[in-house]
Length: 309
Ligand code: PPE
Image (cartoon, rainbow, N blue to C red; front, top):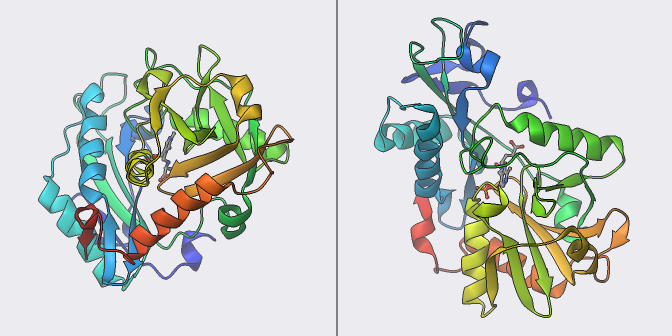
């Protein structure tokens, strides 16, 4: 569904609330030419206690940190960004939504050195349902190992969520979709498993859980951290920072993706090979159920993960 079909009308841009159609930048914006921006994707959930932003503090931490390698100094503090987001959600009467802050080098001059360009900041919120489809959460998705490798952290920091490098994810996603798959898995430069184009990946084998770590050139997902905590609290052994070879994907008992947009999505096939029984596995099911229980606030555990609107 396109933005114009959604019931949203306000964007926060450089400190002001502006009408949706007025949230514009110049075509000579530095970030448009060179991808010199950093962004976040967070969610606000319609919980039993009202709308609440999930792990907002961690998303803010990552936003500011993403700017570090690029000298992007966001000219607004945490409280300003938080207040702006809360007000955007309230003004537009949203119960649940996706939250997209973006900070980028703006308009002044071109050339690779961005230091004379101002840092512009925008926040938009909109309703966004299940990323890979409602059915995906139940049935699982069919994925393919991409022919595109994930860029290495020695080339571009993968722990920074930078706009430009997402062309790597776009290529992997397009290739997967063109070939009839729902999503891709990217291998890193070494040929081991990295992550999905917009998701981290978890593998279950013999009742234990494995996930790739930062040294495998991944984004350190906040949902990934959430899943690790939930799984450990459920009593599972989690091997964070595992090296997962391509071959292990096909013989895994279970595989699933994690991400703000994708939440906890089972993977039912990789390159047409069924994973486990080719459906959502029991460990994935337990973790996914716990995740939904937490975000719906059907439990009072993990209360400090929520920022009520
Ligand atoms: N890896 C990548 C490359 C990635 O983009 C995401 C988020 C993750 C892992 C998971 O991170 P986290 O959301 O903190 O658990 N992908 C975002 C972008 C989706 C989009 O299409 O845009 C997201 O899930 O919001």
